[in-house]
Length: 260
Image 1 (cartoon, rainbow, N blue to C red):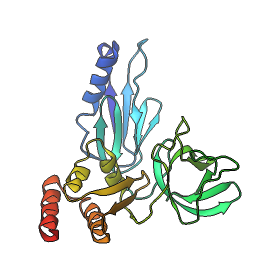
Image 2 (tube, rainbow, N blue to C red):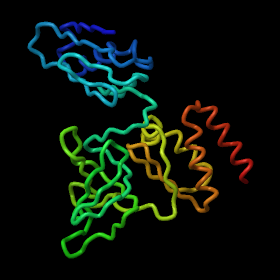
Image 3 (cartoon, rainbow, N blue to C red):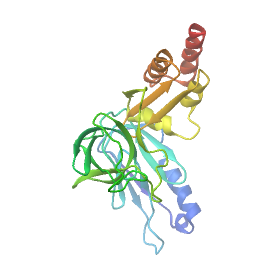
Image 4 (spheres, rainbow, N blue to C red):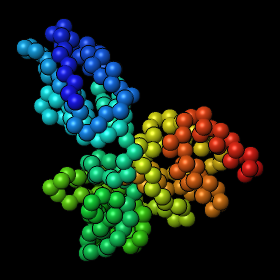
């Protein structure tokens, strides 16, 4: 199905009016289920103004003046001009700039091979750690969990990870995971957990203190004071994926009443 949108010339005068026009174009579809093959066409008419800029997130692909839907799910919107498809996909496709949880599988010379849940393993240099030099190598073993960021991720090259930012700082990345539990959830739940002021995380924090690491590849690591509390947090995260806010809060209250 094709949704053709013709923007009036008056909408291309300023950036604010363009963004308002974008929102009005999609407002009838935001929150609805779209299927692969659906597309939106933006006709700007004959004007010297800059073309409409649309930032396409997961599930959407820009092709000239058209936006193609390549995943089934619910169309979501974030100001000022970001759109994506919220789906329950579990298969991860690496993307540059995303932070993920990986498992070291091979040590080969100066390169570590890391399983990130994609179609192929990513490479991680021993120099991609804070303070690492040729003489001072990081203590990374096969089976360790690493939290890193993609610096190369496209269909024509092998994915490459790093555990330092542009300033050479770890900034929370590196080897971790001692004593915790890692499990896998859908990519839709991952985005909800990573959202600013996540309601799911806030409700969990009211139970008991715990550590939480979330990767964009659908892997989640948790650690609480005891093994029992760690398992409770993991089970709650897995069970609340398809619950409403009221259902989730009711479940958390029952858990608190039984645990304490």
